[in-house]
Amino acid sequence: MSELPAIAHHIDGVAVPSADRATFDSVDPTTRRPWARVSLGSTADVNAAVSAARRAFDDGPWPRATPAERGEVLHSFADLLISHAEELALLDTLDMGRPLTQTRDRDVARGAANLRFFADDARLAMDESMPGHARHHVYTRYEPTGVVAAIAPWNFPLMQETWKIAPALAYGNTVVLKPAEQSPASATRLAELAAQAGLPRGVFNVVQGFGAGGAGAALVAHPQVDLITFTGETRTGESIMRSAARGVRAVSLELGGKGASIVFEDADLEQAVAVVADAAFSNAGQVCLAGTRLLVQRSVYAEVVHRLVSAAETMRLGDPRDSGTQIGPLASEGHHAKVTGCLDAAIGEGATRLTGGDRHGWWVAPTVLDGMKSSMRICREEVFGPVVTVQSFDTDQEGVRLANDTDYGLSAMVFTTDLGRAHRISGRLRAGNVWVNCFWVRDLRSPFGGMGHSGIGREGGRHSREFFTEAKSIVMDIGE
Ligand code: NAP
Picture (tube, rainbow, N blue to C red):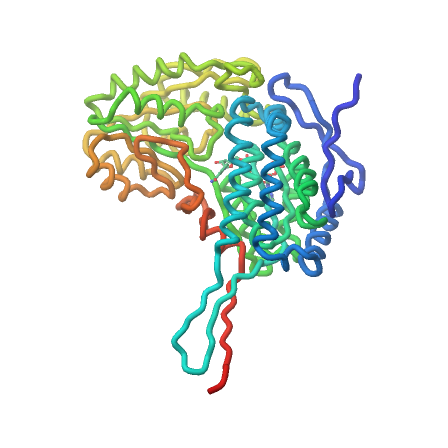
């Protein structure tokens, strides 16, 4: 049997195996067979990575470089992402089954955009001065904070990881990234490309391994980590917040979602259903922002549900490396078991399956469930699979009440051609991100994050700048 490709940690500028040589396998969800052997990080590897990041922060050139100098390196890094797009995209596809056309054309492109955006933002950001004093000069500096621990999920590996490391690096910090165990490959390659772009050693480190009880837990508990940026499940976020409390470290939590798509009777139904289907089933529903609860005004309920079922049934499931594939397999055996378990429980609680639910390997066909009661688990818990529930409502007030009847508050979508209604409803929804007649569109200047169980803090634009820096006020007596 041929050797599997090896994926190492990246610590202090070089690829290294685990101190104890332990490994685990990354499994390709398409074949359900291991495709790579990955170094399994332990506390010793985390300690080595944090020490490297600490040295690079305390004594190295990166935090002391000008934003323009850092920006040059980050733009070169972005160029390398683009010139290695096919290779990077395939790594994510092999790890977690997202179609290659999407990992390449959307995720790598967005990864490069993340790096370029924050490189430029850091260059344009200015320290502030407060004029108007007779003999004092008062100003504020925004300084890099220190060593950042970045913990990422597996659903858009490269995109999520660059969303964290780009602002951390652009504002002069050093980083230790722990990718999800299901999606290790692109993270190590990112670190190699960053080094090739000219990032000094120790500035960006990657430790592979498990979260709870493993490298992830050791990283967030490390006393020399100054700041934690986490994306993942709400329960993991709670545990990370407890770790962050020790030493009073700042933490940003981007957590789960249970987004509602609200279709009003005046909507352009053809356009609305196309967006609703994309928002529910894209990436096999493994999207924090997914519109998993479809709420439809009663007069157009039958038509919208009929259109959605047709859209679900025409989506092409297949090998994620084939260019025509829209939906790949779920990312892992454990996740497949979770999603199918949620579906079975919903049917057990009385839901009606209008289409989908068929399983083949780790694929689950896009599924539409009717006969909902808001108390059902499927209406309350994040499934993170290609499953949408449908409910009807009569008035605007009832639509908003149903949409807000969740502990989460990450995303919501509104479909209407009435501009006034679009503004009124958007204002009443308890969600960090509201899209009207669209989905996916992002402006990296706008804050991104969730309310309630969907997280704390916002990242994006000046919010990332504030999170990844320490503000320092300086008051200087300059004499008469
Ligand atoms: P997860 O199980 O919470 O894991 C996320 C990361 O945390 C992984 O790297 C994981 O490592 C690590 N981890 C787990 N327990 C840890 C601990 N005690 N200490 C430190 N690290 C720990 O989430 P996931 O299943 O990967 O991702 C799916 C979730 O992410 C969904 O809830 C989704 O909604 C959410 N998400 C949110 C956003 C957003 O922007 N709000 C974006 C994308 C995804 P291992 O995997 O190696 O165990």
